[in-house]
Every structure is written in C-alpha cells, then in structure tokens.
Image (cartoon, rainbow, N blue to C red; front, side, top):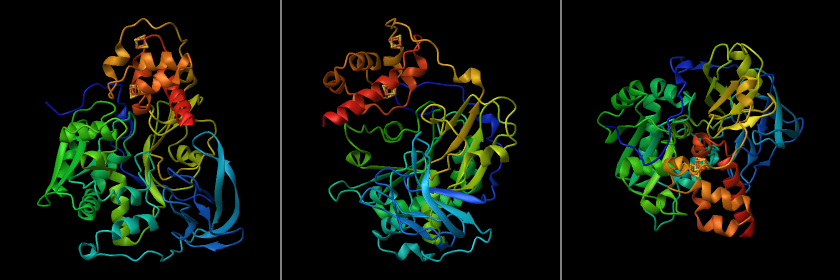
Length: 435
Ligand code: SF4
Ligand code: SF4
C-alpha cells in the first residue's frame, strides 16, 4: 500500500482532461503585464520607466527586502507604463506594462554555469535571488531564502514535490514526463547547496508514468523516487514530509525544524535553468482546464500574459463562464476578470459553468465530525469556526487556528455547507492583527 499522511479527502481528480496533452508553447502577447507583487513578501521595486527599451530576461523590478523577489521582462520591447492591473488576489496591483517588439532579443544578465559542481554552496541562493525564482507550486516563497536555512537547522532530507494533488492540474505531471533530466539536475543542485544526504522525489500514484520517467532519469544519482498515495492535500509541505520521512513539523514550525527542505518540481527545473542556462524565471507551465474548456491544455506561458490569452489558446469555452479559478479548485482563487496576468505561481487556470459557481445554503452543524476526521492538521475545524463566528479569536488561537494550512478539505466535506475555511481564515487574520 502506498504511503501517505493521516486525514485528507478524495475529490474527483479530473486530470484526464489534460494529462495526456503535451506542453505547447503559447506565443507571448502584444503586451505583457508584469506584476511587481508575484511572490510572498514585499513587492519588487521598479527599476525601469516609461519609454525604456528592455530585453527578454532583463531585470525590471528589484527585490525590496529580505523576503521579496526580482522580476524580469518576459519579452523584449518598450515599457509602456507602470500601472495598476488586476491581481489574482482580486485587488488591483502595480505592474510594468511592456509592449512586445516580437524579437525576443535576450538580455545576458546571468552567467551560465555548466560546471555547477565546482560552485561554492552558497552561490545557488545568490543565483536563485538574481533569477527571481520563487516556489512555483503556488506558495511563491522566494527560493533564495529557503536555500539559506539558519546555521543551527541543518537539512538532511531534500524532498522534491511532484504530488500535484489538486484536481485538474497537470502542469507538473507533464514537466516530469517531458523534462525529467532538468528536474533531476535542479534537485541535485538543491541537495548540493544544502549538503543534504537523502534526496526524495514524491509523486502521487495517479501518475505512474511520471514515476517511471523520473526513476529512469534518477538512475545512479542517489535519488529515491517514491510513489505516494493519491489523496488531497498530499502535496502540502507538512503532509508530504510526514508521508515520506515519518517526521512531523511541530505546531508553528517550518520544515527546517525537522531537517527537511521541500521544493516543487517546477522550481527545481527553474533553478537548473537559471544556473546552467543563465535564464531568469520569465515563463512557466500552466494547465488550462475545467469542465467547459473546449480543448484543455498544458501551455508554456510567459509571465505577464493575460489569462484570456490562455483560454483563447485552449479554443475558448463550450458555454457560459460562471467561475474562473487561478490555481487548483481546492486552494486556488476565484477571478473576476480574464485580464489577470499569469504570475510565477500560476499553476493552472480553470473555467466552470454558472451552476458550479452557486454556493449551497449554510445550515446548522449536525455534529457529524466529518471535518475533524479529515483535517490533515488534526484540528477541530467546526470548533474553531464556531469560536471565530462568536468573535473569540483568542480561543480560536488556542485551538490551533494558525496551524490551518487552508487546504479547504473541511469545507469540502461539510454536509451543512458551512464555509469552515472562510471562518478559519478570518480567525487567522484577526489573530495576526492581535499580534
Ligand atoms: S481546518 Fe484548515 S487544515 Fe484542517 S481541513 Fe480545514 S482548511 Fe484544511
Ligand atoms: S462537517 Fe460540518 S456538519 Fe459535520 S461537524 Fe463539521 S461543521 Fe459540523
């Protein structure tokens, strides 16, 4: 029996819509919208102005703090303006708008290193910072910060996350099938940079072709490729660590507290491309899917491309659009416009009909305990939500609200349609304010 974590759910996978579709290159649009905030932390500071000519891969926004990230131009062209555009979180946010000259004239800002085995270990964090690499599984945490754990927290396990547990998404699956050698090389770099002894690639067992390809590519490289049980949220950091190593990240702790480092497969590949090819993070693989998309696809997309262009490339929809999600259906965010640009963390864009947008009416809790049984963090979602509704945020905190990984499993299983995650998120934000 495949290994896994305690709790979790089995929503319909719906990966069949796109898992067999080879990655296609989406030509960049006439105009790109490069958000300055497409990572955890402070927005990047623009270092270009209206009228400037830029090259593809040129740094146009500089990290504005320890937790921040550089942004680069995904095309060559002219800076048209710096203006607020729709952000995937639902707000408006500043972006550098570039008119594409169609030439893709490259910048040569990063030095390629084919002999990376001779680089000092701390060089990889510097390259990741310069290349603007962030976690591409959706968290968008700056990779250079992760690659620099505190000195008293040695890492002995590097885990590469190929679980891709969100329904519909197949971008990582295709990357593992089509670029396994690149992912393996990026994985080796991470392990070398951190001095880790054990290297594991965890893949859900609904992707056995990817397990086979990655195992083949990892031959003789001291890397274990392990199939884990298909269950949501298997790809969450703490759950993957637990399944693969048996270790438990303590409440309020981080993976390095148990000697682990977790990175998504796409990020490992981006690091490899930055080191070996001198390529900053300006494009990513994104799944376009959902029940009404005419031709679901996996596209290699330049950052800053409006999601409308992705839908057009997938042949549009077979009916009225009722709901658009950036990311997966469980943890992704609903979009109100198709003008939202793709970011470094856009793993997918999903389209559903109006009937899927309707929320069931919330009724009283029937004390079925389903939410408690499935919570992967072993919390009591119903009790935390109840305390949040009553404004008892101190009690919600004591009940472990801050440990909630916001996987949405509790809301998914609740027969009373209680928006448990909504209340828990609210409690978390109030607890942060109390701090
Ligand atoms: S309480 Fe948080 S971690 Fe637990 S199931 Fe709900 S959303 Fe997931
Ligand atoms: S799943 Fe819903 S109805 Fe059941 S205990 Fe939790 S909150 Fe109550």
